[in-house]
Figure 1: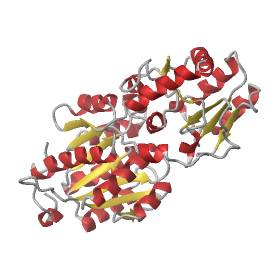
Figure 2 (figure 1 turned 45 degrees about the vertical axis):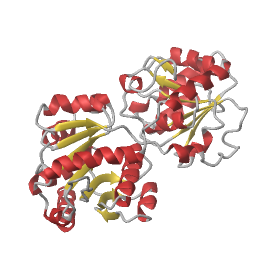
Figure 3 (figure 1 turned 90 degrees about the vertical axis):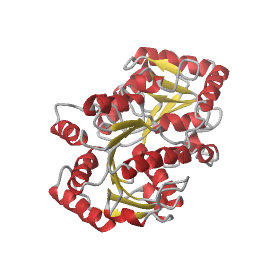
Figure 4 (figure 1 turned 90 degrees about the horizontal axis):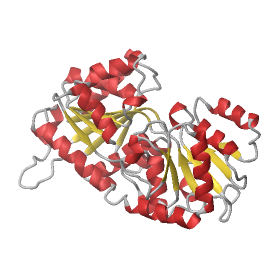
Length: 380
């Protein structure tokens, strides 16, 4: 047990175990893991837990946490596997005396995991992707796997992510799947988007996400060029290492007026009521926030036919396109735009599939895992 644990209420006769939890994450920027952590930490604090979040960089989700009792700690923007980062995490662990350490994203899985193991604090590794996300030619991948196997518990947001750690950790630790929470009410009540971006009646398709290999935005660009109709445009919101290459491809294909690369827009939910649909051609995923948020708004979807999407979507709720198949995507775009009523029927079915994906349900599931770890003395 960690040093601060004796001050907490024991879990017996239905009494809630209040704990000190330390979340470690690289930033509180606009990504999906960052959104999930911000929602979870705020809910945990509201339940009376003592919640600490240590990050290298701030971001849009830090604003939310600053209005709660969550304590945010500065680690300094130390990249990679910096020994200084490990020392700073260790200092925060010694000062906060957490009962549980939860790490988010690979850098913190390694640096935070090392400290958790050294200090013998029960450690939960949060898996936000699946095996395909990790290149085994990179040292950080096998270092993370080597250290990660020693975590006390793994929480994935998809079956594919859970299977990854089942295979790596064997029977050493528990592996759970806790789906991403969706703030459906906020999404449905989001203010309408700027009409200069997207107006009702226009045929506009959205792509939202990081501009990298995973999201396969180049496939969307090629499909736009191949589509037999030209009366639609594509708005791509995101930043990332492929931005310059994608911009060049748009110009080379003569799509300057039809495909628009735009900075990530924090208030993009408001576009979902006006858009014709959203495209996600990801090559691999976890439990993708953008797709879930689109479902909550009952906006039609075209998605890549990958196992992670198949976990919660099918042909009755979305148009499924083979991965990397620009020709099939072009046909799906034409179908979606030609049959808007059928597209809305699929979207309504997709929205029905979100029942139960609340932050309260996610926090309940985490509380159960924390309780097992702490009462069980750090084992599952």
